Image (cartoon, rainbow, N blue to C red):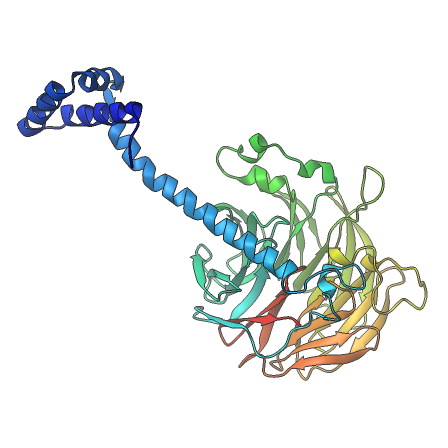
Length: 468
């Protein structure tokens, strides 16, 4: 590499300045010899030496230490570009184009995008059972929580382990991402909620305390006013270096459910509890949140959320700022309710697989799925509080449910070691992945657009399943 005259002059000045401020006669002799060989460099080096309170700023050393920082930044950008390329490849080359319903999750060419055997990757690293999994909304990453008190981050496409987040001192029961995936929330049997930076350093930004018993579930509440998402870069980088302001730009509130029979609404920015709901009479085990429905006006419908647990009752609310307004109370399960799921955002504008008998024009966001220890998966209509379908194929406790992004299927996992797919319209089990794990299947999650589903189990593994 050939240096320009200016670059060569700066280099010589930096070398002279470095030699002149080292201890020892040999360095001083070298500096004097360098000055005789290049008087201009000696002049520039002396002039370029800056002092702040008597502390000399070494120009050459500053440039030298800047190289690793730049290399780290380059690696981060290369990794981000790789993730973006993977996502683009999935959405174009793998047939994940808009299907008949206009939903990317439908797939093209008749693909139903349902999980199939065998698992594409099995992720091992936890020393105890896996309790929860959550797919990153942007990158090809998945997060898992475990009874070992750790949170592990994986690349679900390559199967590579990325890192471990430590901070909880007991079982991690649930994890949840903000809509953009820049922050993660976790809750634990240690009675704490932790907010994690998920952009670069993976630091714990804040710990929230207030529950009197095990915290079972956690979810971010989406902002009601979409305009508030448009935070400036200055706002996102402020907050006294905590990164909390950037969380607030996406989700100002956080929900948590606990064995103390309460659901709490937290202000993410202040860390204070805005409200405590005490309608449940027993352990609250699960939460589900549905994003606000955009409308043609400047406002949008309020986000909805639901809670359920040992009292066998599902309570559904609409969130109006700090107020949680009761919307529906659903009864029908005959044992503890372990899981809830609203329809995915991407299905908005379409129709669910089976229409309500009471109202054929029911909005897709008026549906909720649930699973419980009575071994059933149920589909509910929130408007008339009716149970529209009961699926009884599982042979043990149902531990997790989700509604497929197409709105045509319910996916569930259970202690019978299986993952099952139910066709809503036909009201039957369409596919069953028997012995998906070697032990109880405790958690599942699915990306809204990429063809991937992940599951966690008491067998201490996380498995990734391709969709076809």
